[in-house]
Amino acid sequence: MVVIVGMTGAGKTTFASIASRQDLNIGHGNDPCTQDPHAVFFKLDGRTVALIDTPGFDDTTRSDVEILADLGKWLASQGFAKNQRLDGLILLHPITEERINGGMEKKRTRLIQDILGKDAFKRVVIATTMWGCIDERFHDAWETDMGFRRKEGGVWSDFCKGGAIITRHHNTTESARAIIRTIIRKSDEAQDAETLLQRELASKSGLFTETSVGKELRRQLDEEIELIMDQLLEHRSCRPPNNWRRSWDIEQRRKWKEWDEERQNLTRELELRQGQLRKLNSFVVSATQRSSGFCLPYTSHASVTNFIHTSFGW
Image (cartoon, rainbow, N blue to C red; front, side, top):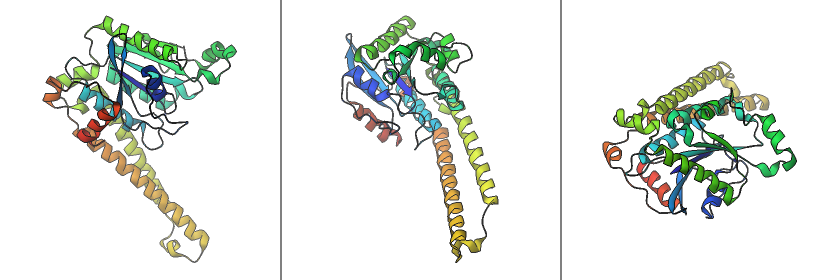
C-alpha cells in the first residue's frame, strides 16, 4: 500500500494511471478530479499494489488541513487491517513550481512527518514531475537552481536526513514502477515497521486527536479559526451605515453589497472550519478496526471511495 500526495496538478492521478496501466479520470491544470482518497490496484512483480491517490494540495474548494485530515483518518481506518500496512509514500512535486519553501509546503511536510514518523522516512520517495516542460539541456541546472536536491535547510531536509530519496519522474510506466519498486524494496528491508500513526492509535485507544498528526491538525485548524475570527472582527468594524443598504445612491448600495458578501464568505469559512474541527475531535478508530479491521479487496478504486462515503460521510 503506497500513498501518493502532492499539490493539485503535480500529476498524482496520472502517476497512478501510467503505473497501473489503467484509464483514470485525470484533471487538467488546477482542476482537481480526485476529491477523496481512493485506491488503484494492479499487479507488479507478482505482488498486488494498492496506490492510494489523494486530493491535491492548494485546492480551491478545500484547505490543505481538511485534505490531510481526511488522509490521516483514511489511513487510520486502513492501517490496522490484517496483514495490511502503509509501505511507503510518494510525494510528487512539479519542477516548474517555485513555492517549494513556502509556509504551506512546510505545514504539509510537518503533517506528513507526523503521520509517518521518522523511522518511516526511509520509505519516502520525493519525485519531481513536469520535466517535459523544461528543455532537457537545462535539467541539471534547473534542478540545482530550484534547490530540489538541497538536503540542508530545505523544506524536505528532515525527510532526506531520515533516508528519503529525491528522484525525477519522467511520466512513463517504467519510471513510475521504478519508484514503486524502490518503496517495495525499502519496505521489505524494514519488515514489520509501523507508521507513527499506527503505533500512536494503538496506544491512545484509537483517539485520533491524541496522535501527533491529530494534534497538529487540531492546532492548525484552531489557528485558522482564530485568523478568520480576527478577520470578521476587523470586517465588522468597517461596516457601512445601515441606510446604505437601500439607499438611492448606487455607489452606497454597491459598497453595502460588497461588504455583506465578504461578511457571508467569512462566516461560511468560519462555520466550515468549526465543522471540520468537530468532525476531527469526534473521530475514533474503533477497537474492532484496530484489532481486526478489514482487508482491502482486489477491486476498483470506486468501491473503496464508496466505502469511505458510506462509513464516514466524506
